[in-house]
Structures are given as C-alpha cells and as structure tokens.
Length: 212
Ligand code: 0O2
Image 1 (spheres, rainbow, N blue to C red):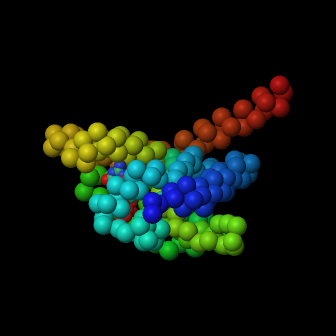
Image 2: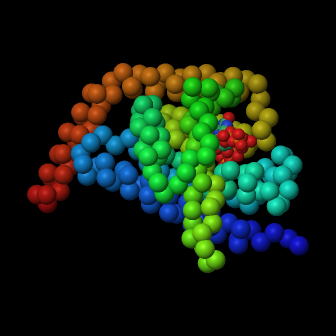
Image 3: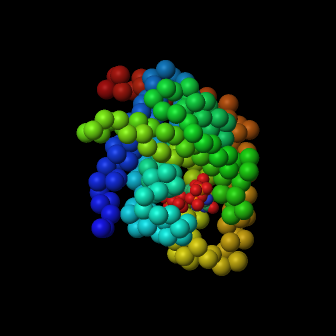
C-alpha cells in the first residue's frame, strides 16, 4: 500500500506552525522590553515528500522507521545577529518545559568539512492530535545571518550539482565560509556599538509612531 504522506505529515505541520509562533513570541517579548533581541527572524518548514523519499533511499530507512530516523521532517531555523546570541537562544530553549531537547549537534565548534556552521537541537515536541498526544521530533537549527547566507548558497549549489560540487567551486565555498566566520568575528567585536545604535533607532521609531 502506498504511503499517505499528507496524513503522516499533519502533526509535523502543526508542530512547525506552533513553534514558529512560539519562537517569534520570544522575539516580541525582547522587543517590548527594549533589550537586544537574540533572535533576528524565524523560519520553518515541513520537509518536502521528495526530499524525505530521497533521504530514506540514501540512508536505507524503511517506511516504518521514517519518523524516528529522519529527525528533520519538521524543521525550524532561528537566525541571530551575533554568534553569542546563539548561546543565549540555546539557553532560552533549554529552560522551556513545552518540549524536551533530546540531542544537540554543535557544528559551530566543530564545523563540517564543507564549511557548514550551525547549532542543531533535536527536540521532542508534543502535539495534540485527534486521538490524544503525539510526541514528534523536530530539528531546530540556530545560526547567525552570515552562517545562514553561506548555508543557503551552498545548499543550492549542492542541489544544482546533485551533491557533487566541482572542486574549484567547493574550494571557493570553503573560503567563503571562512569569510563568513570572519564577518561574524568582526561584528562581535563591535557588538556593543551596533546594539546601542539599534536601540537608539528603535526608540526614535517608537517616538515618531507615537506622534503620528
Ligand atoms: P534540507 O531541508 O534540504 O536542509 P544528514 O541529515 O544525514 O545530512 P544528520 O546528522 O542526520 O545528517 O543531520 P545534520 O547534519 O545535523 O542536519 C542535516 C541538516 O543540516 C541538513 O538538512 C541541512 O539543512 C543542514 N546541513 C548539514 N550539513 C550541511 C552542509 O554541509 N551544507 C548545508 N548547506 N547544510 C547542511 P537536509 O537533509 O539537507 O535538508
């Protein structure tokens, strides 16, 4: 019998929708309190069926193990301005009691050979479905804007070349990853200055919207 993908993915879609609202809520709370917000923006997606099938084929995963073996059927991304915002976000997520962190993968301290950097958390998130509670796995990737820029470009290159990026481009991408890392380091050096400027900017916008 063929797989009913739509039925399988309903709780994953629900989890993505709920978590997007929750993570964006963190952002709003920081903004209201006039503190530097460690979250720049949040995105989320349910893995497209074609990608699930490909991954299952490549990793030899049988249909009845998909939900345990593919941890990113539901995926959230949290983008931060500065590298140390990532630590703040991870600590905020560790304190929550609406899900349980079951795995952490630190590709920032241990970048991947491709040059990829990001912090991954796998969480067990309970969703309410018709016949009760279902705990599902969700992958949360936390990264800076620079890490995200690089990963997005590299991901499309991988797609274009079916995972076999030509050597010269691969080397350029590695150099670009180093440049992105330097950008993060440079921005961290002037973090205080940037944050002060952003708060002044926010306050000025608040005042002008009060007078309008
Ligand atoms: P998508 O939705 O197309 O991004 P595996 O899943 O086998 O690759 P593992 O250990 O199960 O590896 O998971 P891992 O490496 O913690 O997380 C996989 C996801 O991290 C990938 O999802 C990417 O989103 C991201 N990622 C990991 N390595 C790289 C990399 O070298 N370059 C880029 N651009 N992204 C990477 P998918 O499966 O590609 O799905």
